[in-house]
Image (cartoon, rainbow, N blue to C red):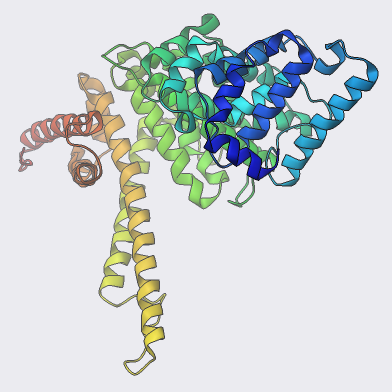
Length: 488
């Protein structure tokens, strides 16, 4: 199983042929162990494994066949000598893989057929295996295994958890990896989304929401500000939260005007937890990850209110966490007030970054010193490279703040749509009760979207609809105040 041999086998399409001939491997635990080991080793290479339906079916059958075996090798019917020989060879191969920096999650102390099959599955994504992977994962029972693994790992975690043992952290890491597969197989796949929402009376949703709340509660207790930190309690929970959000976003993305997924928002505490994560949790994560959490939580909230009136009401009536309160114990102002305040903060930050960009373009930047005219060419080249890098950085930060402000405006736009009471309440939080600032930010974001997305996409249409709605509100407010309105 040297790298050269593995590459040779893959390059000639032999992998699929081998596994096609091993479809009966599930009938013998020894053969199953060897098959699962070969699958696992091949899946760890950078060169994509030749995966087709037969390979995936065999992998899932191995997983199913071993679900009731805690010590698979002990049940395979071999003599002690044969058992030990097989065990040593499998452990040797897996240890070699681990020593090369791969398979870092594999526990070589207790290797089973099911464990190897699951690790192989977790190393694969829809991007590596192709679009068909999403359908086959559902039809062959792969989604069932992933969901049950998530549920099993989360059974020992709740809001009362006060000791994060290494074993518990390892379970959270496994949940994170499972969620990344679920994220991949639920992107723009309505069949998988509906299947997962309904699976065993919504057990996945209930589990995700419970973990969602745990991450919200625990991350402020274990702040992690080092972006390179991947193993501390705070970092592991942060990664799990991000993966959780992405799956919830996919599942709540309603298609064909069906509010099936958005009903997630009516689960107990989901809206309050999401608002708290948006408003408070970014204070306890690395600077570069603040945007991700804020963007993802806003996306989830927008999904929940896009066509669901009940969720709009829940957000409109929700309270915001007190600025000095880590958790939900002290709720004072309405969440809408906090959202409007956050909008103006992000708008101001975007303007500041834009001003810095203008200063760089005008040669007034103080972070890089312009070389003298007679300086060597290398110095001028370095100055240009540093200036370009600064421009890209500032432009990126400017766009991040603009996107957060835009998403807040979109969220508030949906909440105020078809509800005069909520419209008046939001208007009271704005200067002169007008949506001028929000419309300006949305116009800027819409232009950005048109440059980066295909015309007529759902996202562009949604932004255009919100702009049209807020423009109408702006005109009505201007007429009521005797002020000049905005042009349509």
